[in-house]
Length: 132
Picture 1 (tube, helix red, strand yellow):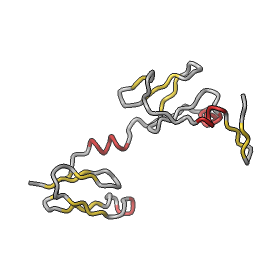
Picture 2 (cartoon, rainbow, N blue to C red):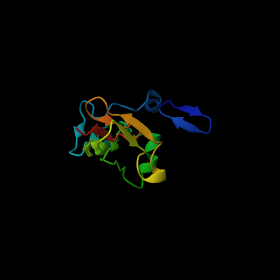
Picture 3 (cartoon, one colour):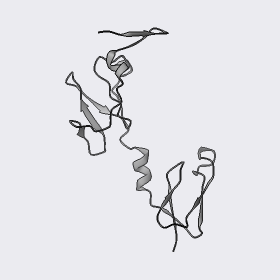
Picture 4 (cartoon, rainbow, N blue to C red):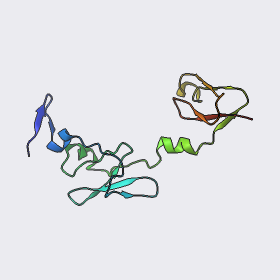
């Protein structure tokens, strides 16, 4: 197997140089009830696919971190959890969102609610609607 030696003695396999990020749940993948995809690798083993589509082939050097422990993938993606939150009704025409949680939030933004429908915060994804 040809490999490329980079500064610091890092070796990349041919598969790693081509890029291993693939679209999640491609054809041939199996979908678990909690939106977790499992991809069958060329070696016959299966590995859970992360929310970014990351999956490693059996001989990939990056799998070394999973030798003593199995790879854990969180099935609860943030975008799905935010979608489960109902939109927040606001009496006025402007909503203010700072992410909540004090210092753990995000910069304060003001959201115009003049148009119909839910309006998401650009930072955290919470939705706001104008109360009628």
